[in-house]
Image 1 (tube, helix red, strand yellow):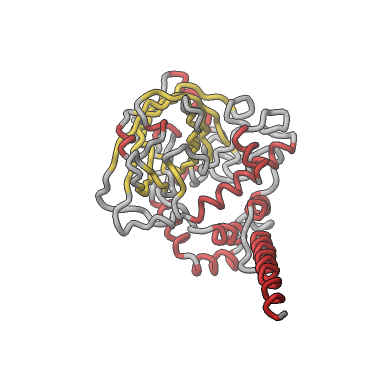
Image 2: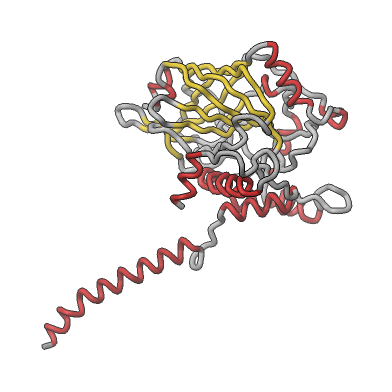
Length: 363
C-alpha cells in the first residue's frame, strides 16, 4: 500500500515542482522577486524627468535630420561575418543625424554627442540597424548608472544647471562619467555632421562561414577633414547651424564615410562601453557609405523608424554588453509612445516601422 501511494505521489510531486518553477520564473521576469530589472518605461521616465516632455518626438536625440544613400560593400567584411550587408554589392540606406538631448528645439551650440543612425536593407530581406555616436566611449556602463546620471544631472528649476549636491556625489561614485566629461572637454567638437567619425560604442559578435565568432566594434571614418567648433563661442551658434550646414553641403555633393571593422584583441573589454580599445587591432575596411540626400525629419523617411541597434542580420549578434538589451527596451518604449501621441514629427498618422511593430507584438 505504501509503495503504491509513493508511486502515485511521485508524478504529482514532479508536476507540482514544475508548476512552482514556472511561477517563480514568472515572478522573476515580472520583477516581483530577485533583483529589480529596469524596463524601457523606467528609462523613458528618467529622460522625461530630466529633459521635459515633448510629445511626438524621440525621448533621446530628439533633434535630427533624415538622410538617404547607399552602402557599397567591398566584400572584405565577409571574412568576419556571413551577413549579406558585408558581401560585395551596393545596398540602400536610410538614416538620421542627431544631437544628444531630449529637447527638439535645443540649439546646436552644445558640447554633446553628434550621432548617426542607419538602417541598411539587403536583398535577402534582412536589416542591419545601427545607432552610433561621434565619441569612441559612452559615459556609463549599465542602465542603473544611466538612470542615476539622469537624476544627478536634472537641471535645477532656478539655475537651469545640475544641483551640485546631487552631481558631485554621483561623479565621486562614477569615475567613468568624470572621465567621459574630461574627454568631451578636450576633444574636438565637429563643426559638421559630415566630418565626424561615428562609433558603434558597443561590441557585437560577428560569425563567419566556418562558424568562428569574433567580437567586433566598428566605426565610420569620413572623407571630409575634421574641423571643430569654437567651444568658447558655442552660445553664439545659430540654433539650427548643424542641420543647415549639412543641408547646404549635401546640395553641393555627397558625403562619404569608410566602414572599418575592428576585431577585439585578447584581453579587450567587450562588456563595458566606457572602456576604449587601444593599441593595434586587426581592422578591415568593409565598404563606403555615401549620403546624397537629406530632408527635415518632419517629412523625411527616417521619421517613423526605430534605429534599435539590436536589430541585426544573420551573422551579426549581440555581445555580452548589458547596455544593448537596455537600449533595445528604451528604443522600443520611446517608439511606441511617440507613435501614439499624434504630435511632432512622429505623429501616429505615420506608418509604424514594421520590424518594431513585429517586436512589440511579440512582447
